[in-house]
Each structure stands twice: as C-alpha cells, then as structure tokens.
Image (cartoon, rainbow, N blue to C red; front, top):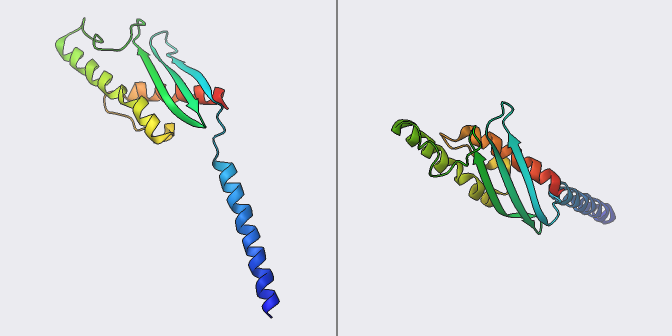
Length: 139
C-alpha cells in the first residue's frame, strides 16, 4: 500500500517538474543582447514614431523614442508653437504624455502593459507598433 503512495508521489513530482520547465521556457522572451530599431510611418505621408531599444540579459534596459509630425518635425517643446496658443497647449500635453512611454516600457518590460496617456493616444499606438517591430528583430 505504501509503495502506491510513493509511486503516486514520484509521478506527481515528475509532472510538476515538467510543468515548471514548460512554464519557464514558455515565458522566456528569448531576446538577443543588442540595439534594435523599430519605426511606424503614417501611411498618409506624415509623421511617425521611431524607437531604439537596448536589450541586455533578456531585458529592455534603454528605450529612446522620437515622434514626428506630418511635416517631419520632431515633437518636442516647439511642437505646435507656430499655431494658436490653444493648439500649442494641446500639442504640449501630447508631448508630455508621450514622453512617459519609454519609462513605462522599462518598468513593465511589456508593451501591452504600457497604458495610453490622454492627449497622446495616436503616438501610443505608433509606439506600440515600433516597439513590437524592434522586439521582433531582437528575437
């Protein structure tokens, strides 16, 4: 009777070990160390977002992002300055929001966990596409 319990325990331990190996292998990102670029260009010929990711030990350790407007100008402290004061304020809200994305990616290590910021939702979508492209190159 005791041998049945021992055999059952050994089988359960073997199944648990196999499941643990499967989980570890299944969740491994498998990224190669290096610097990888991704880019989204607006299909209508204007603007886009470019990212440069640095990966070390299977983790994103640096993320640089550059977003451009329809004329190809970088979205920075001058974005919207040549327009009305109200539009300039809206543009700067967008810039402040999008500047959060790289830091959030470094914290979460998962592009699907980087939330969109109000005022910068279009750039969020572009950022996601560019990051996925860069990560695909890192595999």
